[in-house]
Length: 115
Image (tube, rainbow, N blue to C red; front, side, top):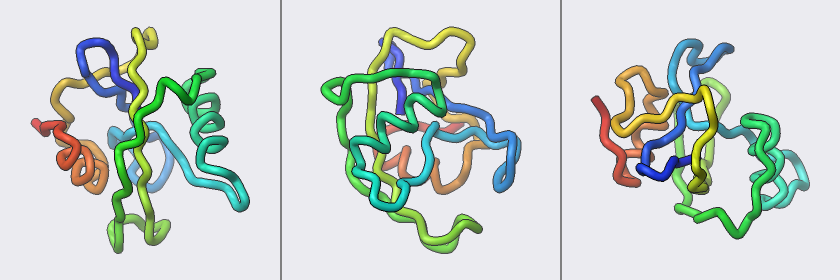
């Protein structure tokens, strides 16, 4: 989870199934035998082209999604990174209604609001 200095959250719009056209938190899946710290670094690079320092990250807990994603039972391990900003990206103070529903659930638990 990338936040700018105003506390706005970076969301990306999905261009593939499932959930094409929905806003989502950048991220991905942990690979077999991949330590979580390496996964965080890999996903920051793959999803956003960022090289981050793990000291910049804040672990926010573990959230579970059961029967809401066609890919299966998912554990979400959100990590907050505060950055000055990434140009040409979409930051939101209030989450758009067309955000992936199970992302909304854990983001609301973390204090974000929905339109």
